[in-house]
Structures are given as C-alpha cells and as structure tokens.
Image (cartoon, rainbow, N blue to C red):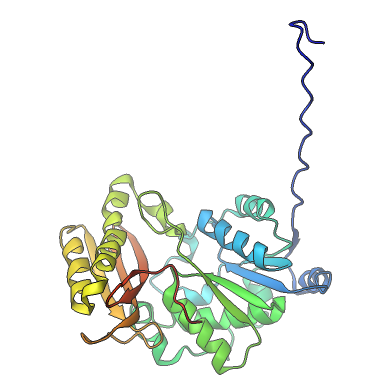
Length: 311
C-alpha cells in the first residue's frame, strides 16, 4: 500500500521506440533492401527532402493502404532551371529520417546525383509534351521533363506497385498519371488531398523562406481558392470573378496566373461547363514563388473537392 493508504500505481510499460527504416544510398544497397520487401505490395512516396507534416500525412496514408512503404529523398537537379538556386533548397536529412521513422517507413532511398545519373546528365529524357508547356511549365521551362525523368527512374529502381503524390502539385500529378498510362508503367498513381497550415496556407518546403509579413500576404492564395469554391454553383465566370476579387486586394502578391481549367487537359473551361475543374493559382510573395490549387465541382450543388473522383 502507498503511504496514503491507496493501492500502489502500476508502472506504465514503455512503448518500444519505432524501428528506424533501412537507409540505402547506392543502387546496390537499394537492390538488397528492396529484395527483403518482396513478400507484398510496395508503395513509394517520392520527395526532395525537407519533409513536413504534409509529407508525413502522405506517408501515413500510404502506410495504411500498403504492406511496405519506400520513401525517396533526392534533390533532383534536372528540375531546377538556370535562374533557380538549387543550393538554396533546405537539406534536413536527420529530421527527414525522424519523420520517416515515426511514420513506419520500411526503406529510405537517399542517393546522390551521381547514383541516379551515373553518366552525368541523361541524354535521353521523358518529354512532358504540350501539357508540360503551360501553367508551371511556362514559368519553368524543362521542369516537367526533368521531373518525369527522375520519377520514371525511381519507379524502376524501387520497383513500386503504387506511387503516392499530393494534390497540391496538380500539374505534376496529371503528368505522372499520363506518363504511366501512355508508356504502360505498371504503377498505380494515387493522389492525396493537400495538407494545409491552420491559416490555410498549403504546406510546402518553400514556406520556410517566408518572413512573417510574407506569410500574411501569402494567405491570399488559399483565400482566393476558397472564395472561388464558394461561387462554384454559379458557374465558371463566378468562380474566376470571386477568386480574382480576393487577389486584387493584396498588391504585395505578384500573381503569375489564376486559372479554372479542365483537370485532364488544363484548358480553360467555358462558361457552359459543368463538372469537375481545377482552380489553380501561382505567384511570388517576397522572394518566394508559391503554387496552390483546389479541385472543384462546378455547377448546381458544386463546391470544393478533396481530390478528383476519376484517376
């Protein structure tokens, strides 16, 4: 008995620390570690590092749906244009590994560029085609060719059954799905809804570049999307008008584009259109370029969607 006459407290058993994933840095290490996962389906979550809660949510969703999860951490130089500072991108591998550990990742593949591109810049690359020349492709020429090239290589190297991507990078997601369909990749491409900060800002590694005043300005992007979604039942013109009205009230945000497009073609939807559409915005706040989007159902009963209903 305790001194106060009560029964002694039972010690709470300590939970075992989660097992850290295997880390592979070479093709040989990846091949060996991947062979140990051949007893079931394998999902991959591809990242460029600087993981945040959005990545963690994506990994958790993949973990629930598949027996094994592989995370790739690779800062792909092919995705950076001549005016984009690759050296500025945050590198936080130890923190990234902690997130992967907590999420139950089996294997982390963290190669250097010479491992992914052993012969230097690849002479043969995947072309994004016309869909890669609009919106983000217009602002970042060659970006999507570089993205598809590394995604295709990582799909082959990890031998994944499924690949999970966030809805926030909607154009990237569309192009990866088209690549897998057009080139017969046997990979199920799965989308997860955009994860947002409490103030509505879409989670992104680039948010770390924002000053407090920049962050206040950046809130107009998600606010414009919400305003557009609230007007979705009235049709495309009402969506564009409502979203634009929010952006014009924030002169410190330099908007590259605000579009309402078909989710499969990225072409502007006409006024008579009714159905699923993508409301997307991109702009520069301070020195940081941000993108955001919201899937919508346009027409009677319309509004915001988490993800599109069709793959």
